[in-house]
Image 1 (tube, one colour):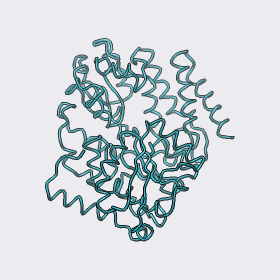
Image 2: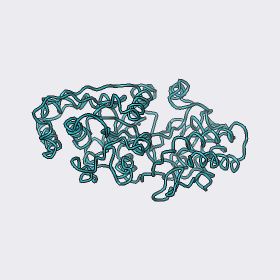
Image 3: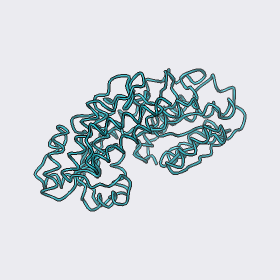
Image 4: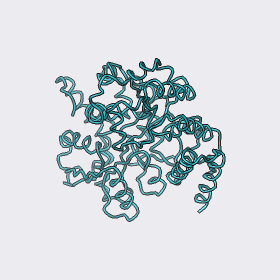
Length: 427
């Protein structure tokens, strides 16, 4: 977990922990009574929570914390069932950002901005866009634990072999595609794993304030708009030129492509650099570099949140759950420990001034990439969520596949997608 600290640093960490846990309005409900908290989480957030428990026990010895860990998909399926049936609810629920909106709209999460939690008073402590992602209708329903600032990871050796520079990849989306053609012709490497990846980023470009990816302020469907048209056209260009490997993320083929050096770039969250270094492709150390996304786009890839189910156990359990969430998300030492051990990029702004951000990353050839990712995080704006976002994404991806694999016209594909989404939204 956390690297060794000086005695002064340890004292500072304990002091900040004590300050973070001071919550007089909640303490009387449980200060002297033994209780057991159940925390439901997924890798690697489960390890982060376990690593924080010794510090939590020092100030809350009467609380026993049980961490229930499931794989990512199984965890969220179990949480969906628990919220819908109000049975087997944990006291603290970990959520990936893609699930926060749909769970919040179902009314199953506690409003942490209201008394006695008053998380709204701490709103400025976290990266602004992450707080927005955890909010719904003015309520903070989930507290950001870590974030995923978007980045372009690229193989510097392959790019150099093709006679290209980083700016050829990042100047514009059109330039990125043209650079991919040179990469393919001169090295044989694919530009990216799947053409869908370029669509996923471009549709996040130019979203108006108060709007979501697929739905506007009044739930109008936004699929037939210029950003979707451009995204589909660019993805079609990538496929037509044979620039994508046609493989999905987290597949065996994806991992093999990294290890063999047949993928030149990957648009992703900053956390992937750690995964590449630790287990995906450790033998490629020193060959990768991090850059901004093409066109200077600031986008987020993932992020973890902690929430309290509204129908969870007693007020005493909720009070203790809130204390644990505060420790995990408002304590600078804990946030940095998670960053150093699990590459969980801190959501807490107070952690962003640590010298760790200026340290060179050997996997990235000594690049000080964390500072780049920190600057990106501060430029990201949150998009609004809608209860039908998951369905809309599925429809859009299906129509894009028809464009890429069957030659369907972009306009026709977007028209059909819009009609299907509108039909579902009216139900």
